[in-house]
Length: 65
Image 1: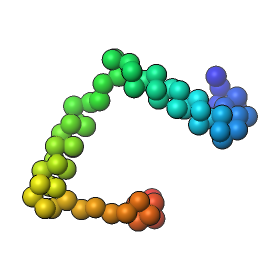
Image 2 (image 1 turned 180 degrees about the vertical axis):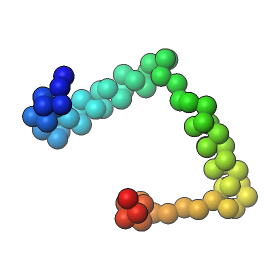
Image 3 (image 1 turned 120 degrees about the horizontal axis):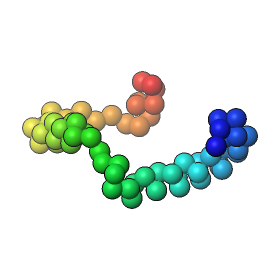
Image 4 (image 1 turned 45 degrees about the vertical axis):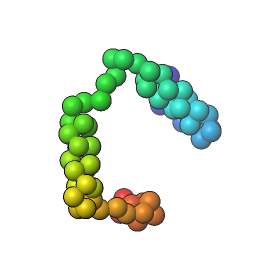
């Protein structure tokens, strides 16, 4: 499928295809998270346990992007 073909699809159709692709990838054993993902999650968990975790609302996150 080309970009031109994808752009002809409606937003709903593109989202449906994206969901199907994600579902197929999430069950693929060859598609493992890289080691650094685990390291980042561990660092964040430790910050939360120490009371140093910082949480922001989804609205605030969207404004920073």
